[in-house]
Structures are given as structure tokens and as C-alpha cells.
Amino acid sequence: MFIRNAWYVAAWSHEVTRRPMGRIYLNDPVVLYRTRDGAPVALADRCIHRRFPLHGGELIEDRLQCPYHGMEYAPSGECVRIPGGGAVPERLRVRCYPVEERYGWVWIWMGDPALADPAGIEDFHWLDDPQWGVKGTLYHAKCDYRLIIENLLDLTHLAYVHRTTIGNDAVADAARMTTEREDGRVVVTRWMIDTPPPPTYAKVGNFRGNIDRWQIIEYTPPAFIRLYVGGADTGTGAPEGNRVGGIGMRNLNAITPETERTTHYFWAQAHDFEPHNAELTETIFGQIEVAFNEDLAVFEAQQRNIELDPGAPRINLPTDAGGVHALRILDRLLAEEGAETPSETAPVPTPLGG
Image (tube, rainbow, N blue to C red; front, side):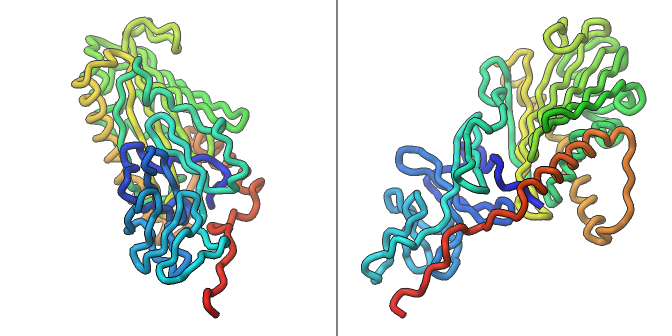
């Protein structure tokens, strides 16, 4: 179900503090906190004594104390104190997950720690690039993470789900679309030439007539999707690098599975026009947030129907090509990875004192 040997987004940086926070990733409970020097830490959120969640505990300097019986853990996961228990055997520890902090996100590696190369973290530089205005958030989606991937790679639904903001009939009826798959990535490109701007574009772009509009969507596994979208007066909306005027936006998506039926959905909207205009950033984010809340309702309605009858038939349309390719890449990577990495790599400790 899940690719483990990959980087996932665990939290926005501002969420990880000196107050331990519990989350579930890929069916594994994890506790996140910061050491006194600000470094993020991720440990298995399960005390080795009676499996009680650690995230309700206190930090004593940089040691996390279990709130049940007071065992203390170093940031490495090693148990360093057992109240009333004397010396602590070296083997007593909880799993420590590799973490990195980049682009305003804390990233986590859920698989084999020896394979956790920070160079493999996906590029989301728009999140902290001063040339872009940006705002993001986190949704807890009650759905299979693959439904979100499919949604973002087929934007035909904008014409029907998002008519009041970013959609109109041109997305479904007037678009020229191509789909490319290479080197483990998928790129879906749509052009809508000489068509009316949708409401959000008209509002933030101040267009007076028809526009040339583009949607360039890139998927990389396991679940990252970056959209370059925008519009310019008809005849001036050439591909990126040749655009004259108009508006350009990046929609940035990091989709982290929680369980088979729930997902941590991190997303942000960035714009390259008037990047330091905070009011404009809020307006754009607000418009996209309306659309994404509509999508959230779609995902959860789909999930309910799937759970009622997992074997019910479904078909693919030509516009589904991007999603089909993405899920095939996921299936291939899952097969290559083979058996899942155990959620706890440390041996089960033997009882102390007989």
C-alpha cells in the first residue's frame, strides 16, 4: 500500500515545537518535537514498556518522558532512564526516524534509515523564495491518498466542481491536453486558447477580455504534485519563460498517507506577480481554499462509496491518462520495494527482572 523508502512531509515547520506532537504516517504512530537547539526529532510514538503514546509526555531537557510510567528517551530513541529500575540495558530503545527541515516543512523518512539521502527531497523552493508570494495549510483528508493524486492530474473537474473560482467550461471543452511519462515522473499539459478567464483569474488578473490559459502539472512519486498555472491576454500567453504580462501561479502539493483511508494533505499557493502584496496573497489563497474545500468533499464522498463496495466497476477516460500513469509508477515502485519495512526495527525487549 505504501512506499516506505521515500521522503514525506511530516509537518509544517511551525507545527513542530518543544511540545511533543503525535501523528500517524503510513500506519505508524510518530511523535515529533524539537531539541533545545531547535533540531526536529521523530520517534516511534509507542513506549517500549506498555506501548503507551509518548506524545502526551514532557520534555526534560532533550529527553522525552513517557506519561504513563516515566521512562525517558533520548532524541536517538535510546531509553536512558527507568524510574526505580537501576541501570538501563543498551538494547532498550524506540525507533528514531531520519528527519530533515527544508522549504518550511519537516520531512520524514519512514523506511530503511541507511537509504535516507537528503538529496532525494523534492524541490519546493517556491515556499521560501522571496520572488514568490505564498501561503499554505494542511488538510486531514478522510480518503485514500491516491484519490488526491488522481484529482490533481485530471483538472477536467474544474469545469464542474469549481465554477465559482478557478473553473469554467474551457477546461473541459476547449483544452488541448498532452500527457508525458518519463524517468518516473508524469507531466500533464493543458492549453486553453482565447477563452474567458474563470472568476478567480478575472479577479486577481484584472483581465478585460479573453485569455490564453495554461496548466502544467508534474507528478513525482510517491505523492508530490506541482502545478504551474496561469493566464495572459490572448496572444501573449506563451510557455513559461516567454510570457508577456498576465499571472503565473504555483500550486504545491505534498500528500502523506496516514492510513489506508486517511491522508495528511499539505498544500500551498504561490504567485509570481506582486509577490510582496500580502493582501493579494490572502485573496489568492482564499479563492483556492474555497476550491480545495470543494475537492475535500469530493474525496470523502468517493471514499465512502468505495468502502461500501470496493469491487464496484470504474472506467478510465482519455483525461485520466496522467492519473493512470502515476498509479502505475506507484505500483511498480511498490513491487520493487517488496515487503514493507517493519514499523519497529528494534527487537522486542525481554522483561527486566525475570
